[in-house]
Image 1 (cartoon, rainbow, N blue to C red):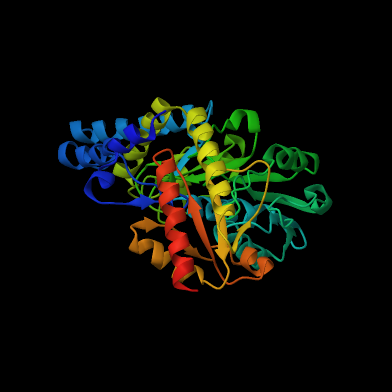
Image 2 (tube, rainbow, N blue to C red):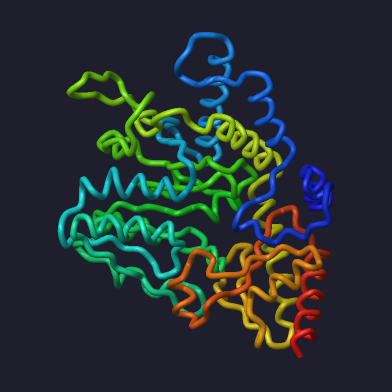
Length: 398
């Protein structure tokens, strides 16, 4: 795999000088995705599942083919278990509203970890507050790994929701173990795969989780489209998340009945162009190969860690043995926002802040950190440029 050749697939890199090291926030978009979205609007823009005229049928077919591509990409047999959402955040909220609020009772427990993104914390807080359930936390160790998860399961545990890969530490959690524990305690398992599905192979059939959520925009796709996978037997029993067009079978003034899954959960006009664009992104990821992407990212991550360690005053957070392409750090006496601004002057884009993970920052006893994150379009030369820019920042603050 040649990242320099793959970079040519992305118009943004040809149009501006840019070292983009923030793919954990969102990925850049290849020409095939941009042109696929444009083609929809240019050639067959129409609504889906509603009309018999040609372009509507074409749009519906393309939209549903994208769903089939996602199912195959994740090794999922039943295509109707794939629900299009706006992103990981909406997917998790859907579970919190449509499953938790109808299946949990007062004093039941929801289990999450201390390293979750806010999108995998706040929906459960709201649900627990509404029904009187309790939110329990699996803490992390200072190396960025989870601390003995089984200790926090109990007979009261009804749902466990865990990030597959941390957006702060890069830790790839042992979700096989979490899912096995969930089964042992008869709890529902939810996997936040926003940081994993874009970067390495994820086999949902092998995992056998109950729900899995991710976003299209982190995996080369457009913004505004995400996915919720749910076991069909669970989805069938769940009430709709939103009401409106398409999610109904019949409507009377005093009652309504619901459409089949997945459309029961896709009220209104969906993000059609974005879903079709996500299908194009998956085509490219398959062409490159997810194993190849993961192996390359491991190499560039190791190179970056070793390079950063040579810089005086740097502190890297997390040292998990199994990790993805996310590195969080600070430099003595330099605020992360100042650091990000200085490297930005060298056309290097990194993230600075709490990364939508304030509980992690609280435990680390910092207000914010700097973060670099990779995709297959990053090069080793870019890491050298980053390190030189960081050294320049240190000299400025001497």
